[in-house]
Length: 628
Image (cartoon, rainbow, N blue to C red; front, side, top):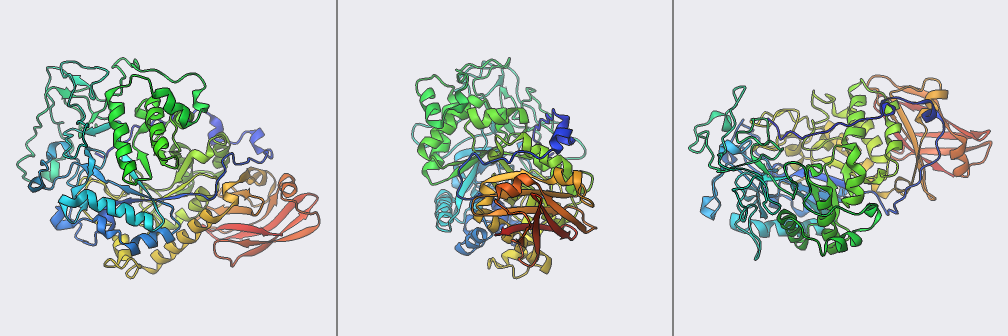
C-alpha cells in the first residue's frame, strides 16, 4: 500500500557481483573529471514531521490528535544546527500542496476525498496545486506561500541551499490550482476528453468509461475505516484517466498509484514520440546548446506547464529540485526543462530518481541531470554487506563501472522510500550504518544525502496508519521520537536525546564536516581492497579499503563491516600509489585518523610498496591522513 516505485533492476554484468581476474590487478588511478571546491551534503527532511513534538502518534490520528510540524519550526537555531551538522543543501520534502484529509474549505480549498488519498496527511507525491504549498505547514493558511518564502530566506541566511520536489510523471487525481499565475491553466483544463490521446492533452483518457475506486483488499479501508461522509467508495471522474504508474484500467488496483493520474508528454499509447528527438551525440553539448535546440520546436502542452512551474519556484529562490520517478518521463523533456532552469540559474541542483542503470548516462548527458540516485548499485550492495550476507568484494567493481559518471551518482543509506537502518527490516542497529556511511561519503566525488533522524539512529517503528513501520510514514500525521528528543521543545539542542543518540550524531557531524572540507575527496580515487584481498593475510570480505588524494592531501580509508569481530592486518599500498604520492623508499610516514584523531599508525615504504599495521574494532572505520 506504499507509493511503490517501479524499480527496474537491470543488472547485466556478473562482474558486478564477482571479482574477475583482471579486476584483481592494480588499476590505474582514477582522476576526478570535475573541478570541485568541496563535496555537497543534502539533508532530506520531511517538513511536516520535523518540528512536531506531539508524541501521541495515534494510528490514523487527525492533525488535532497527532499534531503537525510547521515552516516556522525551522528557526534560525534549527537551521544553524543542521548547517553545522555538515550540510550544504536542505531538501524540504512535501512542500507543494498535495491532497490532505483536513478541512480547509474556510480558505477556499476544496476537501479531498479519502477514497483517492493515501493516509490522512496524504502522499506528497499526489500534488494538487503546484503554485502553492501544503496548508498543513502554515501558521496562517492564508499566508502559507509567504511563510514558505520566509523559510527560503532563513535557509539562505543559514548558508543552506533549498531543494523541493517536482513530480512530473503524475499529479493528484483532483488537481486544481487556486494560485495559477496569469496565463497559467490547470493540467487537463484544455484537454479533449473524447480522445484517448492527443499530443496536447495533459492526460490519457478512457472515453465513455467512468473512474471507479479500487476494490480494497486485506481489510484495508480509507482512514482506517473511520466513518467519513466522503469515504463512500466513489469519486467522480468521467471519463476515467490513466493512473500514475501507467495502469490504463478505469478501476485501478489498490496497489496502483490510484491517487494520481499519469501526465502525457506527447508519447502515444503505442510509444510513438510526437516531438523531435535530440540529434546523435547531442548529449555531449552543454545546457546552452540544449536551450537553443528547443527554442524553435513545437512541444507538448505538459512540457510548458512543468517548465513554467519550475521557473516559478526558481524565481522565488528555490535552488534546486528532486525529480520523482524521472525515468518514467521522456529524456527529451528533461533536456528541455533542465536547460531552461540552468539558463535562469546555472548553479541549480537537479537530482533525479532513476533506477535503471542502462538509462543513467542518457539522463545525465541528454537530460542534463546533475545527480541520480545510486540505488541499485552502491546502496543495494552496501545494504547486503550491512545485513551480513554480502561481500565488500562487490563494491570496487561498482565504482569501476561508474567511473565516467561517478560524480553524478548521489549516495544515501536512507530516504523516505527506504527502510531505516536501525529497523529490523534493514540492519536492526544504527551502529551498522557507521562503516557504510564512511564508505558512501568518501568513495567518490558525488554528493551524500542524509535523511532526517538518521543521525540519531531513528528506527521508524511507529505505526501511524497507512505507512508501515521500518519506514517513517510519509502519509500520516505523527512525530519522530528520536527527533522529538533532539528538538527538545524547540530548543534544538538534544536536551532530551539519549547518550547513544548524541554520540551517533557526533559521529555524523565529524564525518560530514570532514567530507565537505577535504580536497582529496574531490580529486583522485583508487581501490586497494582487491589488491589486499589477494595478497594480505587476515584481510577479509568484511573489510573495505581505498585511497583518495589531491596535491594537498593523501588519505587511506578502511572500514570494518563486521559487527562482532576486530580486524588486525598489515595493509598494503601498491607501488603505483606510493610513487604517485612521491613517497621515498625505506622511510616511514605518520598516519593520523581524521574522525577522532586518537588513532595513529605508520606507513613504511620498502621496495616501492607501503605497509601499515591496522587494528579495527567491530564496525570501526579509519580515515588516515598521511603526514609527509
